[in-house]
Image (cartoon, one colour):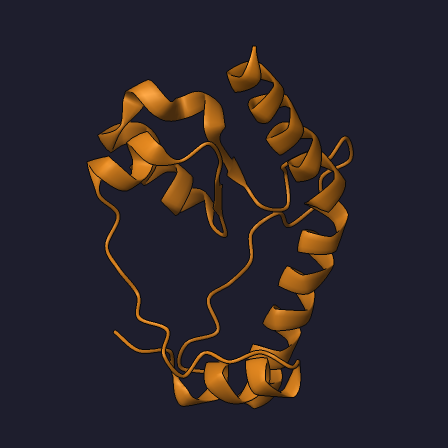
Length: 118
């Protein structure tokens, strides 16, 4: 499915482009090839744990990953069906979380590279 019109507009406001984005269902191949899976809601984490139990160690809620003090509400609600401001708030929260986890993700990538080079 393509991104919603609100999502396209908000990402455009942030300097990005979702016009060619298409969602895809989760598959065994995607899970097997992922070094890290970051979910927005606990129900997504639970779904992955139930359906792909061998990959529990690399599945996290975005707001819990690399966070010694997780937020009280550690899920990010899906804005679909709501107005532009809800989409903007969601996008800002995701942007903040990505900026927060970037150093930890960089460390994981470097460790992964070092492991495969030896």
